[in-house]
Image 1 (cartoon, helix red, strand yellow):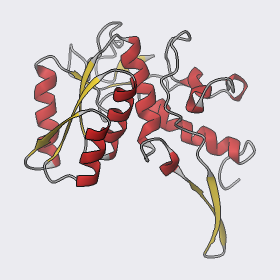
Image 2: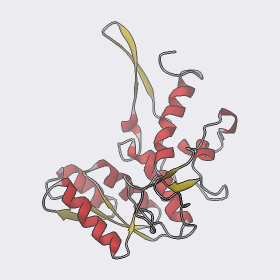
Image 3: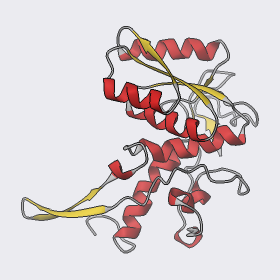
Image 4: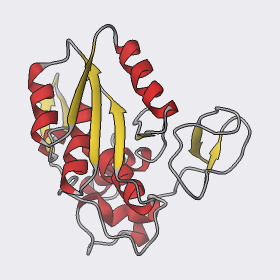
Length: 216
């Protein structure tokens, strides 16, 4: 269940508010969805085999570009065995794709067709990729000084790039003004929907280590 961490009201059944419309508080899972190895569904693509942790309706078709199932590379570092999770293998080159896939599922389930987001690079590129694939119009607000490569990546996915002069905080303020005017703010910082997507990294590592946690 998703509730406001301040007033404890449940997340509304319609719309996609980025903060509690009553008190302005932050929404979060309470409790966080539990991972059950017995419910892993190998018939689902990528991270969607863990969809029992996403909180989405079971009849919603997966929103996937092939994210997840990244390699766990092994190396010796200072005499110890170290594992590296190769998250650059995700579709847009970032672990942010895990969260973007899940939040895109929520957007689809809620009937959203247009979103805004603020980012310094990876999160914006990731959301732009999923929005482009699944027919959402995305406007991504970035610092005017953001990496040219990331800016071109965002635009290549079909999103509208909105450079904002000033600091990263200025970018956040600009996108919040859009949200106050009625835009759907698909925030990776304020909304909790992407968190179960990020958590799939841990589930994969657990599986790749033969059902044990790192260091055990």
